[in-house]
Image (cartoon, rainbow, N blue to C red):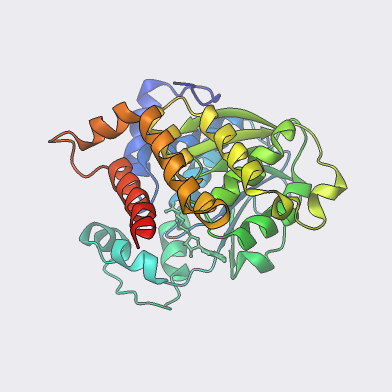
Length: 323
Ligand SMILES: C[S@@+](CC[C@H](N)C(=O)[O-])C[C@H]1O[C@@H](n2cnc3c(N)ncnc32)[C@H](O)[C@@H]1O
């Protein structure tokens, strides 16, 4: 597998850090947290700020802050280094995770309900590193950028409007040859617009590697002004967008991930090329990823994410055709 291009941590440090990161309540995996920790500890140089877009209980912010605290080489920029953006308001999709006993045990049995402000909980959980962190509660659409950005972590690109707005606002502050961008949700079946935009501007970014569903890029060079006026992505045909999704699928070396990324074309094809074309595309995917689908369905494999995603999308398309 293509490895993330970050220096390795020595074994002892990795074990120690791993435990602390794992204990922190989060929607991220241990490896994904370790990736952020390592970027802040070993790659970050202090030339720009660190942005965490999509904080939830602070797992990403904590991983970055802990890494920053362990970064012995760095002279920090003015003000707080890590800028963390979130609404910090309980939404429906977070309730299940918030009410798990393992989460409750870590956040001190605070009962949170839909609409509640959870910033105080995050501040308490990250207080060890409060000197580094500035929280920006509110809609990311209204976000203010602190200055040049050296690391950008995105876990908030939940719809096309946010994706376009974050791009227009933050990318002009990226540093050529330096900024590292982590898309937490890239190699999976959702958020096609994230992959489409990133692949459309592929000449301006170097792909560094992957960790789970996350993709890591380095910003190579400044984008032309026209990239930020109007939305170039909105003008692309469905065929062009699907080709860009294929380009994203080609980056991952994990066959299951390629299949998931390719599945994100199906809703576009259904809507813009028709159901017959969607069935044809689905059959093509099924033929090429026959092995992955069979393996995922083997008894004892459990209901894997891949199988659930495949069944959901395939059943929807076939039901629409049958109706
Ligand atoms: C998947 S969670 C982030 C998980 C986090 N990185 C972690 O370590 O667990 C996505 C977050 O995005 C936030 N969010 C969604 N839409 C937003 C918006 N328009 N503006 C600001 N935050 C938003 C949600 O409140 C949620 O906390």
